[in-house]
Amino acid sequence: MAEIAGKPGISLEEIFAQTTALLIPAWRYPEVASARVVLDGQVYAAPGFEEGSSGQRSDVLVQGVPRGFVEVVYLEPRPALDEGPFLREERNLIDAVAQQVGLIVERREAELDRVHLQSQLQHADRLATIGFLAAGVAHELNEPLGNILGFAQLARKCPNLPESAEEDLAKIETASLHAREIIRKLLGFARQMPPEMALVSINDVVREGLLFLDARCSRTGVEVECALDEALPLVFADAAQLHQVLVNLVVNALQAMPEGGTLRVQTVVDGGHVCLNVEDSGVGMSADVLERVFVPFFTTKDVEQGTGLGLPVVHGIVTSHEGTIEIHSEAGRGTRVEIRLPVAGHPANEGEPMA
Image 1 (spheres, one colour):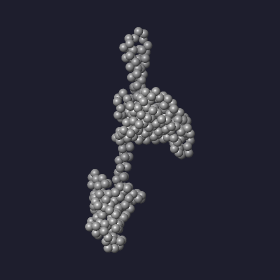
Image 2 (cartoon, rainbow, N blue to C red):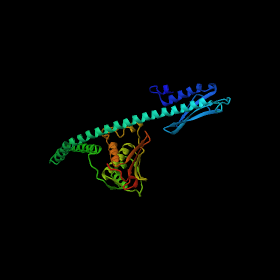
Image 3 (cartoon, one colour):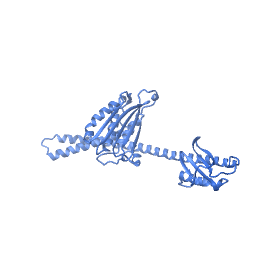
Image 4 (cartoon, one colour):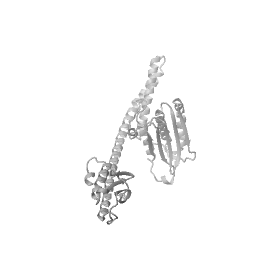
């Protein structure tokens, strides 16, 4: 078993399949023996395995927690020995095999945890580097961009301006405003804009945000379903940043429903947290895309539609408020975003530092 488990690239399924094959000739009556390993409800059985007239079983413990068992059975009756038709040495052997299975699983799970932690550390380091660069670039661009916008607005006030020039200046102004919005998002992502914390009603944020986007929803044929818990407690937060969170999520949902659909916005209280859920019936996301939604500048949208900063900014705002965000999505079946923020003054949240 140790030799099998040490093979490079071998999966747990292959290890257990080969283990069951090894068990059969290790017992006294291999001609009528069969075996299986059961782990977390998954069965790895020898071909033709069935419940026999007698069997020997040993539990598989992973870090002290029962996760399954190893079993050897005789498909036909055999003479009585130490444990029914089984020898005492066979009891010791099946216990040792079960222990080895548990150790193999522990090592595999520890390795997966290590790889996951390393990935998280690399991601955090990448985010910190991108945030530092983003803040620097945003500050450097702010001044020349402001000049472009200001001079374009002044030029539009010139008398007897040709219509074509007026149109071109309007395009310059629109492009400058769009660029300024991107810079604002960059600064938000890099957390260069200090929050203004106060007691905030999430329901008020939702009502104001949906009122702001009502015309766009109607224009795209999206029906809005709103279910707000009127007994929702307040949260200690920056209202403008929460408004940005809602707007970003709703705009993402609308872009996912180009042919119309249903947008559901819900608020509920869950213990010491207020929950904001935004769900759409749009195109959804594949598992590969879902893994990268919080990576800055990653986007599946056209250049005119997205910068790849919307969800990273949302993630940054939520985490800076000591909250959590989860996204559930499946291609062709829509997306659901769940945000949890701590209730202001709730005993479970007292003493938690605010970012």
